[in-house]
Image (cartoon, rainbow, N blue to C red; front, side, top):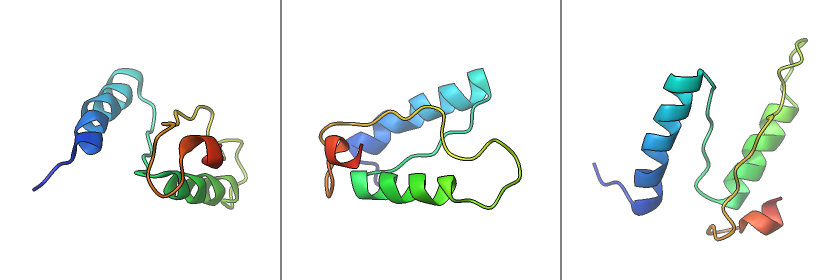
Length: 71
């Protein structure tokens, strides 16, 4: 298994947030992927109020689409 630097940084942070705080974490490796994930979650068919995301961390220097454009 090959792990690049970005993924290496995400693994411990994601684990800590999920285990210590019990918060579900979604990740995207570029801005376009993040935007698609946001749109999918926002338009999910759900009768509850848990649609969308409450907090998004966005890297400014992402490939494909940077964080500023994606935001």
